[in-house]
Image 1 (cartoon, rainbow, N blue to C red):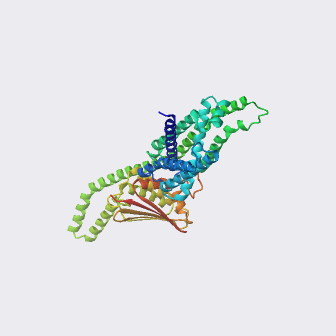
Image 2: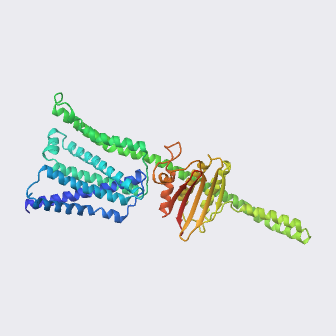
Image 3: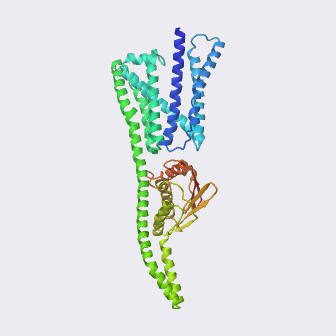
Length: 475
């Protein structure tokens, strides 16, 4: 095979590898945004497959640019300025492509999220590229000769840059698979706090800057061997400490915070289950007692009527009806688990002198798993109780209405001030509570749980009240 064909095939393979690396990086940013930043995304198969068109764009672009260069008389290698111009055009086109992809990937604030993600994409690629270069240069020896070949003689070409490209691709693919199958697919969301995000950005900048410190050392006071020996040590330390340890520790810290939130939901669920068991046993005892006494009570009523004591019989029946009413649940929503949750929270409302009203039923139940039921309604009612308890005339209303396709559940509570509902539903970690560290994720979890059942969550607020509407599809 002619050498020209070998070089052409290698260049095409290198281009495809680079495009796949870029595609995986785009997808990685989206998944990280969903699992660690609390963003709401739509990662459909159609959208994922559309990323492969980037390969076609770069191939067509390369052919078109080569055709233009030939028509302009460039038959050999182009000069540096022209090559930089071509590279700039490619980079600009790919950047626009990523903006369009991110615009369709997010469900809210699409323009802002697209710009935000494009910047993150640049930082991620810079981070991974630096990591790959460090790894290859260090394991190749980390000497001045290696540095000169990589960054001066064969910059962007040769066996070392091939190794760097393959390493970068492998790391990106591994991170994507870990993020997808380890977090996104099983719906594990570990939201990183704002201070931790800032700290990581500073860390990433240092990761890129530190390796170049030896190059800036005064050549009059230090030998090349010492300077590149220092660089080799920095490479090794940065690979382990900054390249690996920092992201892992950050995820572990965020996972611990998310587990606290999950534990609270599980505690609410267990409390509801225990309440349900307790109420069930109590009702069973009362029902058995009522059944035992009903025969005697009915016989007594019959005797009163036979003897003409109508008024006494009427009072006795009234007492019996009252006892029957006491056996019936106080709150009936049409869903047994929801009845228990509301009964639990209603007791707390009574303690805080919050006026509570319940209107409507969900015929046939909401068809939501008990754990998810607690995650949604225990969270919502807890938020409503906390907001209403600080008002002069506290109230909470729980209304259920039915349409042809949805159950519409509205929880309204008194409030002291108007709330930014847009920010409340779209920003992870946003809360009006003073304890920012341990609050702000409840409503985000509610939204995710509702959307898991193809439901819709809406919020309205004014100066005196706050209303959360939950639309759940009917079975």
